[in-house]
Image 1: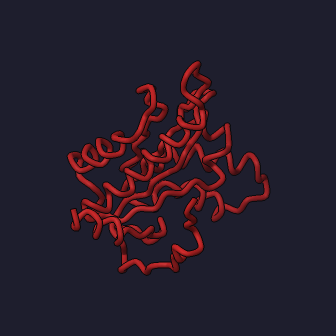
Image 2: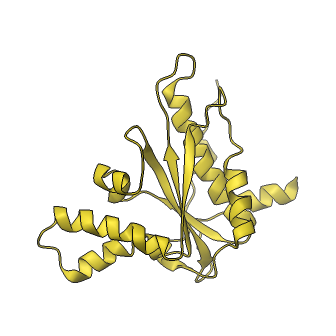
Length: 187
């Protein structure tokens, strides 16, 4: 399995604004989503789902984000509103990972939330394995109930992250990683 380990060691986040096209094909998107769904899921609850934004859908969703932004910021300039409208158009593909964690008689809600995070990470890793770059981000609109309603989320659903996927405009630089001696202890 050294190839898999090498792949994992080379994954880097690339800023959404630095992602270009072409994005994944339909079959590559299916592969990415299939891998994303293969995560620990105690009780087989599937406490997450995905919303795919590609093509014009990125701007249609951006209209919702821009409208909420403008309503909350009456003094916003046209430039600021346009920036918000383009939030999901920075990359060729954006996948929202939606957490559907809910109280359950046997499965703690925390485990369900963690499963959503695992799905988002598998999504990022699968994109990398196919030669794409990705960035898992939230930003303000992931927490605004008006935006979530506009994107079709149910009242109990939250955004675990928006994963922007494309091709890196330039080779990504690595950031400093914590030395194991600072983050590992043995009992």
